[in-house]
Length: 249
Image (cartoon, rainbow, N blue to C red; front, side, top):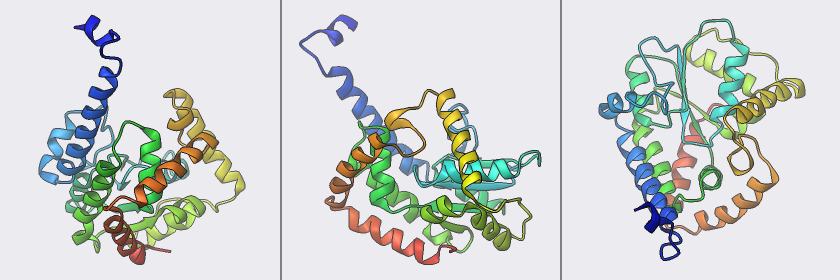
């Protein structure tokens, strides 16, 4: 079988199969993972989902991929180091957020413009399909909308520009006492250094890097046009507008 798959008769066999697997996995994950009922199944994959919400979680910060998750979590955990806090983050599953809400855990939902978030996801993995990625975005936020009064909404631009004010908003909303520092160029540099170190540790570079770079910016321009021409884009845009209208500024 290995010889056949590597032969010139099937030059793109592996790539085609891998693309189909990833498309189906993202679609199933983005739909099934949005229901709290199926969360125990995701707990079995601890390496992929190491930070799911539990009864011991102090705060849940989550959102669709590439919506400022890494930046705000790095800032938040850096400012609260040594506090023994347990934060749930980076699951990208609405079911995880619903579990946090059921446990009355302070919960933050991050959102970014669909043309930016989805294009960044496609840059991260070029094998993914634009329509499937948009379906993931729409289903994630549509599923959570009926719970919107129970969590704090933070937009990507606010998270990146003033994470300190975002933490203050968290404290105000949930009557908590999480630490923050006045945001400055120095604080931004510290956060970026931590992200770069994490990228080196996990061998993330180029299109897979956490921070913006010329390669990612160029690819995003290409995908952004494709996304905005997709018939699902207006639905995603309307969802973003609804969420951003309620976001803490």
